[in-house]
Length: 437
Image (tube, rainbow, N blue to C red; front, side, top):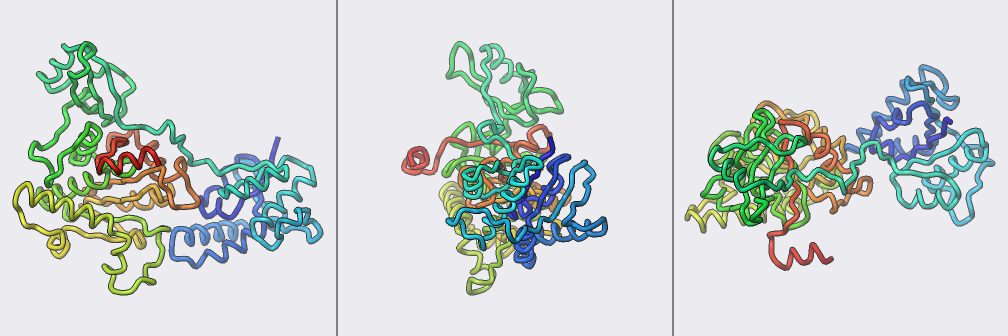
């Protein structure tokens, strides 16, 4: 049976294509949502862009007939801009009618009272879903791009093998996989069935169809040595030039950003495989104007980029301690080898021959992540790091953020690799806090 799907403004701002995501059902946009789109359309960020695009789509549909009567869609459904009757406010007195969320709720109530077909309110606002439920209206989140976080691809697995298998792997430098469902570039911990301490680390190479050893420099990477199997898997992916997209997910203190920056410095400053190491993170929300902070661009960025500076100071301090070199990351910045910048103005750019790290990628929507990855030019490697459980963006969660979305979509691609890091290495206190608090 066909349904009415009443869309909240935040759904339209989250995904422009949500207008066409409800098959042959009737999509209803309350007139107050159009008013809210008008308020966002001048924003110089992803939300403003989506607001403008939705407005353009609706304007194009006007050529097919009056929007208030409903326009037929290719999928068999209809699209309608709903203007509420002035006498139809049936909300309880506790809900202030001039509030936009409550007006959207009132539209759903009016459609339900007409009783022609079931009504469902689609919103990313948790409280609005609760209010709808209290009023007997079906409500749900917009989930077309959701990934079940509990089933998120980890990027590695443990396989029990015989002692002879591990010995043969060390002798030949390869081993035929025992399991047929391995993903490209998936890490494998081989464990001896008879002796759990007898192990080997490998990575599945799809082109060769076999498990191959990890390629890690014995001298470390800029004074950084992987401290556990997860970090070794991550470092191997980061140093492999054939893998153009690497995603690292994990809780605070697992070393995601640290190993990514160390590998990037090796590939740019030492090996010169890439011309520049570009490190960026969202100034939340993506595209937020940074002109409110005083000073030049570097001074404006400093509060947002301080976590990156902390990692750079640690790396250069470790290199000095390890090799006695007196280099400073400011020197690399002055030479143009290292650059820190916001994601604010990335749209429309082409970024060739660079090692690009995007930190805190869990705060980006799937569409924003797509915008970033499609900027990659020839010979560019992109590394996305983040913790899906630490999200500041009110419109996404651990299942609908861009990082989780990319991990799941790229897990079968030979050009990409992923590792979920779970073991904290920052300090004993940080690890206890991450687990207990």
